[in-house]
Length: 383
Image (cartoon, rainbow, N blue to C red; front, side, top):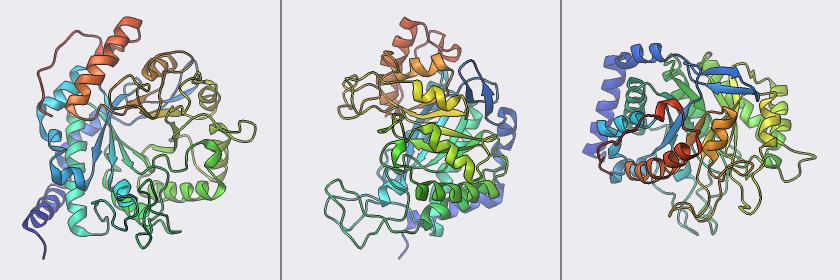
C-alpha cells in the first residue's frame, strides 16, 4: 500500500510541475544568465554570468535525509540569506540517492534508503525538492550545479551480492539508473540559464590513472544523453577525486581530457572538474597538474574541503591548499578558479567552518573576494 506521505509528495510534485510548468522562476534564470568559459592569466576557467568565479557551497539531497528531517533547513529563508550575506554565489546540489543505492551496512545485501528514478512517486518527491532548490537559489542570484552523486563508481550496483567491508556493493555492467536520471533531469532544466550539470562524481578510484578507456567511453555516452536533451547547458566532466597522478609519465588529468575530447566532447561548452584531495598530507599539494590542464581545457573545482585536523569532522582525507597555501580556497582565488566547498552544507557547519574558519583566514591573508568583503553577522539559523 502506498503511504499517505508518498501520495502527498506525488500530488505536490506533479501539480507543481504540470500546473505551473516551472514558470515560477523562469524570469530569475533569464536574469542570471549561463555560466561560461573565460580565459585568465593562468588558463581557461568556468565563470558565472557576471564573469566572476563562482564561490559555492554544497547541499546533500536524498531520500534518507529528506525523510529524517535533516534537509528541513532548505526551506528556512534565513539560511539562504546567510549564504548570500557571506559571499556565496553558487550552489552544488549533490543528489545522494545514487550513493545510498550503492552502499549498505558491511556484509549486508540491503542498500541504504534511496529513491528509484524509474518510480513515479520517487520522481515526484525528488523533483519537488530539486525544483524548490533551483528556484530558491535563482531568486538569491546563485548559479546551480546539479550533480548525480556517488563515489568510486557509477554503474548499477548488484544487490544480489553482499557489500564489502567498506559497505560498497559490487557493480553490474549496466548503467540504467544514471542514464534514466539524466534523461529525466537534463531536459527539465535545459532552459534554466542559471543551471548547469555535473553528470557523475569521482567515478574512478581515485586518480587520473584509473580513468580507463572503458570509463571514458561510458562518460561520453552519458555526456551525449545530456547534450542531446540540453544543447546549451554547460556540462562538467571527469570530476577527479585527486588531481595528482600515480604515474605522471603515463597519466594526468590533461592526458585524460585529451582522450575525452578525441571521443567527441565539445569543450567549448564543457569543462573538467577536479577535487584537490591529497592522500599524503605531509607532501606539498602541487598545482602543476592543474596549470597544465587549464592551459588547454576549462577547469572548475566542484569539491573543495579543509585540511586534515583543521576541523573536528575531518581526520582521514586531506584537502590542503596548493604550493604551501593553508586553505584550498586561497589557491583557487589566486588561480581564478570557481570552487564549491564541501563540509559547510548545514547551517551549523556553515557557521562553524565557513564563517568561523574560512572567512577569517581570507581576511587575514588578503584573498577575500568582493561578495564576502563586507563586515556582517547573520542571525542564528536553526540547524
